[in-house]
Amino acid sequence: MNNYFATVARGLEVIAAQELARLGAKAVRPDFAGVYFQGDKALLYRVNIWARTIFRVLVPIANIKAYNAQQLYRSVQNINWSEYLQINQTFAVNCTGKNKNLNHTHFTALQIKNAITDRQQKKYRKRSSIEPKNPDLLINAHIDRDRCILSLDSSGSSLHRRGYRPAMGLAPLKETLAAALLEMTGWTPDLPLFDPLCGSGTLPIEAALKALNIAPGLYRQRFGFQTWQDFERDLWQEIVTQAKDSQLSTLAAPIIGSDRDLKVIEQARINASNCGLEKQIKFLQQELSSVEAPAERGIIICNPPYGQRLGNTKELESLYQLLGDILKQRFRGWTAYILTGNKNLAKKIGLRTSQRLPVYNGSLSCTLLKYELY
Ligand SMILES: C[S@@+](CC[C@H](N)C(=O)[O-])C[C@H]1O[C@@H](n2cnc3c(N)ncnc32)[C@H](O)[C@@H]1O
Image 1 (cartoon, rainbow, N blue to C red):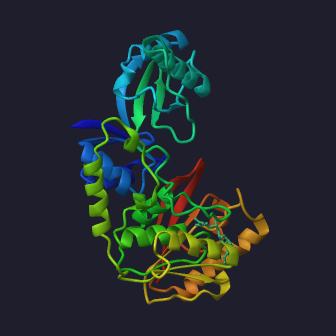
Image 2: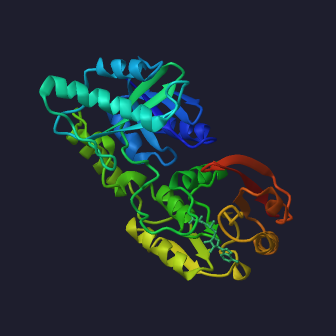
Image 3: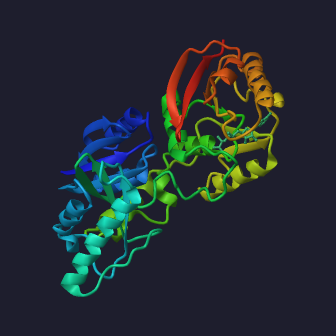
C-alpha cells in the first residue's frame, strides 16, 4: 500500500473523497484542499485516468527539515535522487506554502533544484536539465512550518486539462469544477440535463462523459507517471484498454446546451467532437428568452456571468430576472441549479431556494443555488 495525496479545489474535498473511495482508494481522508488516500500502483493509474473532480495525485517521498534555505538545501542533498531521476531526464519543481525564512515559492523551488543538480554534478559530473513545461519528473515541494514535504507529481499537468478543450469560451468553468457541480446536484444519467447558458459547453460535456462512462483522462497526451523509472507499461495499457471497453454508446436521456453566442456554441461543438460526443450532445444557438423545456422533467444547470469577469450590473440584473421568470414559467417539474458568485444578482432570480451549497470557482467564493420548480 502506498500513500497518496490528491489536490482538489477548496470546498470540493468531500466530493473528491467520495469519488476516490468509489474508484477503490483506501484510508480516504479529506483535508484542506486535498484528500489523503492509500492504494497500489494500479489505483494510482486508475485515479489519474478516471477521476473527474481532482487536480493532481502526489506521491510523497520525503518529509525533511526546512527551517531555512541552507537546511532545506542540505536535506534535499541527502535524498538519493537517482531512484527517481536519471541524468538524461529533465525535471521541474513546483512549490507551495512558506515559512518565515522560505517565503518565496520560486526561491524555495530554486534551492531544491540547485541541491539536486549539485548532487548529480558532484557524483556524475553531469546534471539533469530543468524543463518547466513538460518535465520527465515533476517534483512538488510543500513547506509547512519548519518541514518540507517532497512528493512526485504523478499527474504532470493538472487533471482538469482533459485534452478535449483547446477552444475556450470567455469564462469557462474548470472541467473538475463542472464535474463536481454535477455530483453536487445528484444528477443521474437517466434524467435530461440542460444548460441554457452553456458557453464552451463544459457542463454538458462533463455530464455526457459521466453518462457514457468515459474516463476523462483518455484524451490527455500524457501523465507524469509515464516517464517515471518504475512505470509499468503493461499495467497502464490494461487500465487504458479497460477504460475504452467500458464506454457506453448512447445516452439514456438527452443532454443539451444552448447559448446566444454562436462563436462559443461552435467552440462547444468542437470541444464535444474532440471527445467523440458531437452526435450525443445537442448544442443550440439560442437566446435565453426563447428557451423551452425539452422534456417534462430534468435538471437545468448553468453559471450565468456574475460581474467579476463578464457583463455589467444592469444587464446582469435583467439576465438573472429573466432566468428566474423562464424557470418559473417554462420548467415546471424540473430542478434548477445556478452557480453564482454574486448574492445581489442571485436575489433577482426571485425564486425560493431549497438549498445553497458553498463552492469556490477559482478564488471566487460562490454558491450553487438549488430551486425545485413546482
Ligand atoms: C459564464 S459563461 C458560461 C460558461 C460555461 N459554463 C463554460 O464552461 O464555458 C455565461 C454564458 O452565458 C451566455 N449568455 C449571457 N446572456 C445570455 C442570454 N441572454 N441568452 C443566452 N446566453 C447568454 C454568454 O454568452 C456566456 O457564454
